[in-house]
Length: 295
Ligand SMILES: Nc1ncnc2c1ncn2[C@@H]1O[C@H](COP(=O)(O)OP(=O)(O)OP(=O)(O)O)[C@@H](O)[C@H]1O
Image 1 (cartoon, helix red, strand yellow):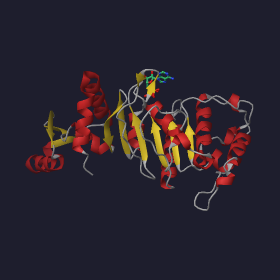
Image 2 (cartoon, protein in one colour):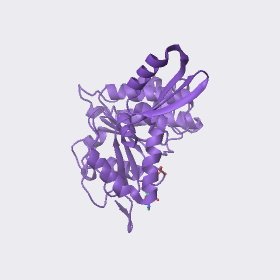
Image 3 (spheres, rainbow, N blue to C red):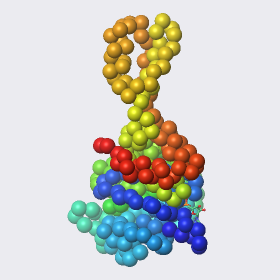
Image 4 (cartoon, helix red, strand yellow):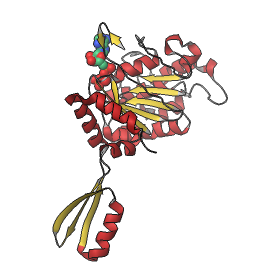
């Protein structure tokens, strides 16, 4: 993908399975928004092959569009509408595309409850707080009961409760066979939500796998820490369970405060991005293809 004469995406090769939650991570400017805008048909690609719900997004018709939900990074519109009124109105566009398997739209009342806007349902959109507005953005994204949902940094501005509610909502949509592709800078959120994580850096995929698979790409070792007689100890081992078993067999009740720490998504992310920044993106991508993560 090129803006003017500048290439911003190259070597993006990814597939999302039905019902999968796929999380795109990467530093600012990595190409996450551009990638999902191409998939949504918001942006025409300059090259490459793309298929979304079996159709090239460049040629998607109304029916194709009805199968897709979109939550953009920023969306400021419809200020005069009341929340319930707006959702009922937007939902009506999806009614012709309702099927027994996927009834459309999600009724406004149900939707308002699901995104936690019950108390604001008669409020005008322009008077909502930032986080409430973001909840409405999510409601607008799912009003058509999409088969595929794109969300670009959906939880920006959410308080902790709203974030947790949002995660529950995403899990319930995925349980209903909705495929979800989202970008976030919140690694904790990615770890909680994603079946699969794709890390982009400099317009390329530098890692692709489940959080656990990616952690194993960085290191197979876990760090075991414990105290014995008040003295702290740390040991790195690929066989943490066996190590802890043997430790306890040897020292019994002298052992206290055992903790086993594996590489976190943050460790993986920082490691991959640092390698890219150090000029090893090609190497990292090649390694990812070579290692084809183990189930
Ligand atoms: N309309 C545009 N014209 C020219 N360059 C653009 C345009 N939109 C984005 N870019 C450039 O393309 C690259 C990728 O941008 P993109 O918005 O896809 O990144 P991102 O990963 O979503 O970043 P962020 O995390 O900051 O949202 C950046 O270098 C950006 O400056």
